Image (cartoon, rainbow, N blue to C red; front, side, top):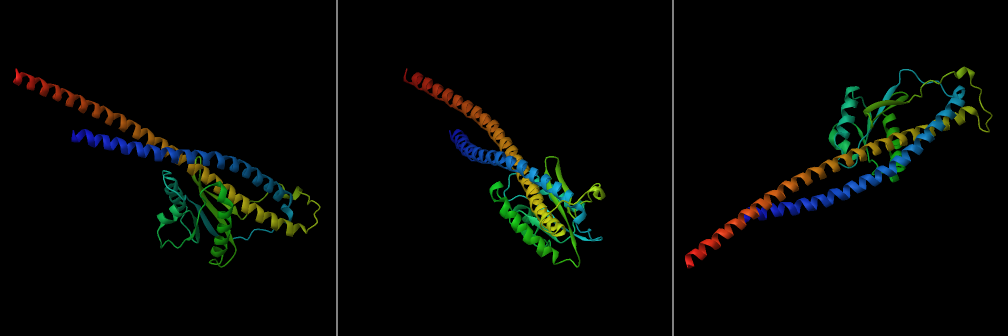
Length: 266
């Protein structure tokens, strides 16, 4: 009897866990749908800004040679997303783990330790607060630039559908056929306008990478939740079989006891 009660207690615990995991899965699925739409729209914004930069290419300043790089790592705020953060750290360290480094996401920052010499930035829980996270990131990048003696480039490390990868955002890559580009007529001086477009491009390019990271994070979390629910389902079925078998044994014992009692009375 005690063993069957223990199994029933474990089954009740599994039911509670299934409810919690089911709620987490629903939340991850809803956020995945939301951030997927935002990421697609953001990608169109980045492409439009790239086209504008191409039109203003002759007015862009020449990139400074031999610049030091600031690194920006996009991690997760919440857990249950598999090897998301580990993949980012592994890829970053394979590139040499240079500093200064801005680390986005409490989970990733906690994995690097307190003495990593990095600048920690609170990440975004989802698409709705991603813009606020970019403002924090830009402020942290300004702090990182102060640690460098000269102009700096910007490398980002984030996770997309194919895995963690590094990408250069600054300085901008050289445009194609710049010599054939004719500057458009603008109310503002072309050089000033090009500088402002670069600022907008950096903001929206960072937002695009952050949304991509959030989308992949929630997809991995959704997979983790589904795998956990399947494991709990299999474990529950096995426990139910054990409980039924124990109950059958108890019934047999009760019948045998009744038979023995009747024989004793007879």
